[in-house]
Image (cartoon, rainbow, N blue to C red; front, side):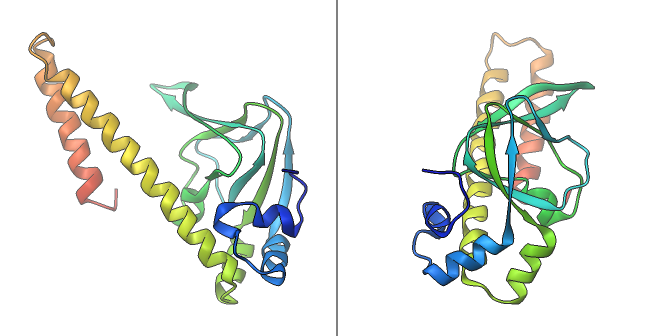
Length: 184
């Protein structure tokens, strides 16, 4: 697939596959192409965020700052078709992670203003995009749940140190909060 922004490329994304030519053209109007070389930083954890991205080509690493060691942990390497940066757009909060091009990458950026204009105009593509975003968030939450469960299980093993009990309680508390409280 070409990363060049055209209606055929827009419709090659699964969430946009059934858009008409006119609907794909409307979506295309909302996108701005961003080209990154390998190693280029798109944004940093803590930056203000007012856009969301789709990966049209290449890979992007998502990194988080742990214990004050900037960008020391790669959370995920995203590939073509991935949506990211949506949390800042939806929550109007600073970026929760850093995004760096793992390879040369072509992204399609949707600004908050373009997104809101599409919502206000009730454009069909934006509803498909919302569903795809909700799916991506649900997948991330499911992955987090599995990882937390694995950590809790590992910490609860009898051979774990005595401090493990406190760690298990902490992890169980976090897991409970993640699935019962939606405002942190």
